[in-house]
Each structure stands twice: as C-alpha cells, then as structure tokens.
Amino acid sequence: MPDAFLFDIGRVLVQFDFGLAFSRLAPLAAADITAAEADIRSWLTPLETGALTTAAFIARSVDILGGDVTPAAFEEAYCDIFTRHAPMENAVASLVENYPLYLFSNTSELHERRLLRDYRVFRHFRGGIFSWRAGAMKPDDAIYEQAIALTGCRPERIGYIDDLPANVATGQRRGLITHHYDAAAHGEFEFWLGSLVASA
Image (tube, rainbow, N blue to C red; front, top):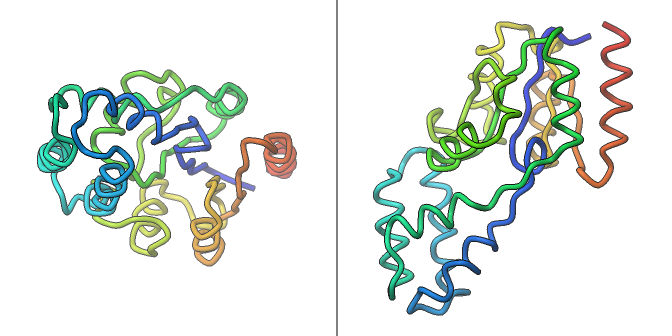
C-alpha cells in the first residue's frame, strides 16, 4: 500500500542508447571511435557522482575524440540518446492524481537538464534524487537514504521501480516495495501496479 513512488529514469521512464552518441560523433572524430567511447565511458562514474564537473567532462571528451568535435557538438550528441516510452508515460499519468511521484536516478547534470527540458513525462514528478547532486550512486545505501527522506514516507509505504537487479536488491533490503522493470514485459509492471494500487 504505497503513499509515494520512486521511479528510475533510464530504461524505465525513457529508453536510451549511448551508442547513438558515438555513431553521430564518429564522422567528426580523429580517434578510433570504439576506443574513444570506452575511454569516455570510463569517466561516467565520476561524472554521475559529481566528482567530475560537466565542463571538465566535456573538455576531456572533446580532447579524446579530437578532429572536428567541438564542445557544442559533443554535448548535443551526448544528450540526444533518449526516446519516449509511451506505455510508462501512460502509467505515470494514471498515478499522478493520487500519489506523489519522485525521480531516483544515476545520471549526470547534462542528462538531467536535457530530460527535464524535452520530455513531458517529467512534469508529473515533484522532484528527485540525482546521483550527480547526491554524491553517491545506486546501489549504494547512502543515496537510498536521501530518496526515502525526500518522500517523507516510511520505506514500506514507497513503491520503487528500477530496471537494474542490483538497485532493486538494495531497495528490497531497505524495505521498499520494489518492481524490477523490463520494458519488454511492461504488462508485468501493469499487473504489479494494479495489484498494489488495489490494496491501498
């Protein structure tokens, strides 16, 4: 019986493909794009925990790629990796009148800014915990403490949806009502949600 919901973002509220960014940058880059992608992605944890600033990440990525890649071109490609996920948009819209909804995501400043600007599904959320602001990433306990505190609810009264098993496992250990989400099995989520709401 939830009093609030926490939603992961990537592969839950929206779909994404990091490969799209590098396929768009490849014609501009001097570096081997496969090696450059691996190098740039190795900096994602510092970026997404706030240890590496956005400006430093962009500068480092442009330097790795070389060629004609500019900071603006990199940022546009890096952020243009998301697509809408209509089934989850509908589910969120069905919840918002009766439940406070919050975001709970491992993400960067760049992606947070782009997502909240361009995707209408996020207008339904009251706020969120983002790893780059929190200084910690799921599945670490520290970020769950922040998310639970944000809702103002007891853990056993919070529904939590995430696509990664390790994140769900920490949620379960913290006492949240969890669902391991798979976009290819969205019907399973709808069944879980229907049963949960019916018991409220």
